[in-house]
Picture 1: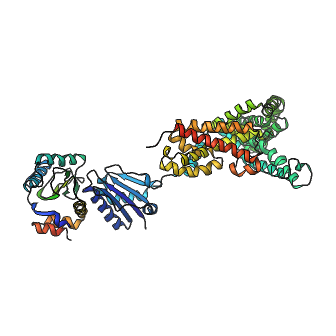
Picture 2: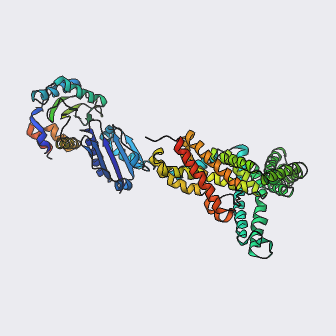
Picture 3: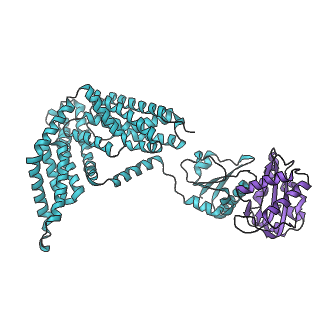
Length: 452
Length: 148
């Protein structure tokens, strides 16, 4: 049996409160719906709803001409109407209330934002993100297997035939080797569909072999995609030969073009850029490392999974292919602190948050620990000018510390679950994340106003 | 205490003369004055009208329950009134009102009374009660309508 709970109230609290209640009860009985109605009349609240009542209810009806506190109905579908409505058409109200959807809880909200954002991506950014999303699993698999091989010592993989050697061969020699080709191939795929894959992946392999690295791979992906799109449009064949386009003409021609461009035009300058970038990143002074880490942190927190965040993330992930692991560590740590800091703030400074937000804080722990920065968005959306600066400061501190301590991370995702296997100094890393979390929470306490 | 204890046969008008909403309210409040429930007739009328302004107490089904809570009221009381011709009362269903319950409650009224009034309000939502009231011609019949 469906169960509804209701609250009725009116200004004088003498008549309407009770008539509305009676009407709701009569209508519910007729409809075979279980109902409990709390009346807030001049006598005070009668037939008060208990926590169990509310928990068991499928829907809540508030029929009141005065303000009724809704906070105790958090997470329930609430239909709020003037008290007269319940006197006029109680049956309709109950039907309507039971049809209402549960308000989205916090985790669902985050998922939705995630989906919306993916759908909103357009143009070059969308293509790049498609490539990145196909690349990530390769990096995860490769990075974690490499990290596992270090279990036997940093040099253990050098002994041929041993398990660490095999792990390194699988993770480093194969999975990581596919990273840039996959990135490049799927950027092209996003632009030109299937025919883009061949020149894209071949271009990506050339980016690796010429030393152009992931930046070269991004370029080869776009180059391949737009080349194929151009060829498709400009080559006109007689109908009888059209079948040759996808299996012969497009792959050969586009691969030839992209390949030659990669070797003779793009390879060398990109190699020079990658080499100096890698050298700069590896040989950075402490001051520069702190500044660089802080910038990565600010970017991670600024739009929580949006384009700025993804730029920092893609950059750090791409660098893994060049054996530069420190920015990845900074980026993941800084991406974890926003939800974690907010979660901590909901525990320490309850008066800054609504009841729903405090409830959401519990889930934010999990999202933060899983490196899902988007977990901060529902909080930020509610109070952007106080929440976003707070999480940016926390992430900047974390990013800076991570770079300062030369922490390295070999997997591009996974949050707390990869820390024990893929981070160079797990305890220190957790400490760095903890500092950022606390800083974020304190910033919230300073900036965010008390909720009435 | 039961509903019959708050209904006073001296405060029942079976043939309201008034033709409009304000007239009915005046007529009902004057009964309160006659029975020494209020001294300041004008003052209490204002209270009731003010309540009507928030939204009409014409609840539909031909029933209206104007009410007022005020220090002008010396003891809780109900005036029952019937209008044969029906009165345009801005009711929620747009139909004219035939049955009136004017409820007067002192500011510091005790819970017992309020509970009975709540009970009466609840009863009015039942069709059988309203049908009996429409038929009722004597105070006994009005009181009996609530005992069904």
